Length: 319
Figure 1 (cartoon, rainbow, N blue to C red):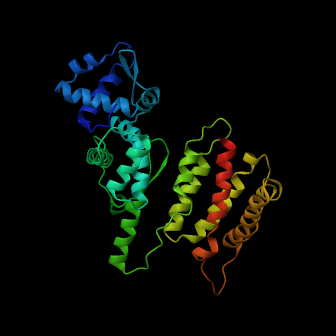
Figure 2 (figure 1 turned 60 degrees about the vertical axis):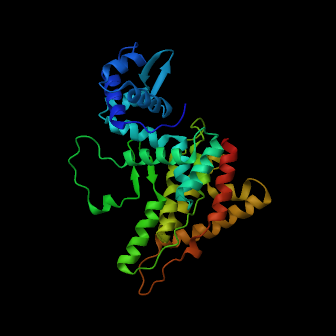
Figure 3 (figure 1 turned 60 degrees about the horizontal axis):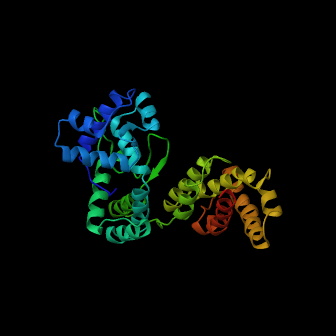
């Protein structure tokens, strides 16, 4: 099934209909086409989209909402929320935006994703589809009377309806540059602390052994802190991660991990991460106010290479 840019209004009408008859098991494509007062072509296109992003499941000739989205609506969620969640969870959309936010242009990002995922679509069409999905994500939910504040208009970080931290690095960078132009402030590095590929690998690991949601969130927040020069936060989050993960290695503390697990090179990295980063974080957390202070620099808190070694080993173990 190809990527399509549907009429999202039609998508919403289809989901309204399926939600209304959620308890029945005989909804077919033809029934939906008859029920929606739109041209069949547009209804079918919207159906293909909803099936592609896994909002609708197909059982033979019958169609129904997936249980996760039924529950979302039962708990008071909006139809628009269902579509937005499905878009942000879609592998194609996430991969495209990950590459785009890492500095590639639209054509480069599209070409990479099309090639990697072996998609049957040309580059210009792919970009058009992604742009239409992104535009829908920016749409206000139906019935909302809330007026956006200035901070919300420029927001580059938000929590979606499922509690996932969403982060638009490109929008973040654009925002910082805009502030520099307005206020003549020094520009942050705009770099990441945790490689986005590591975060993506962690997200793909199931919850059979450990729930990695806190670890993933801390990694995401590390990137946000580092790119905004929030170096106190970087030091404290690095310590928080090392304190969080020992059970994965069947240890009670990170010092036990550093001194009693893995190869010599792994131990060397972990000992450095344990002793040096912990002392720096302790100074951030426990040092009383003094008459004169010096602020941390990116060099002081940059344990990204050692942390990458740790995350790589976690991924290897849990996979």
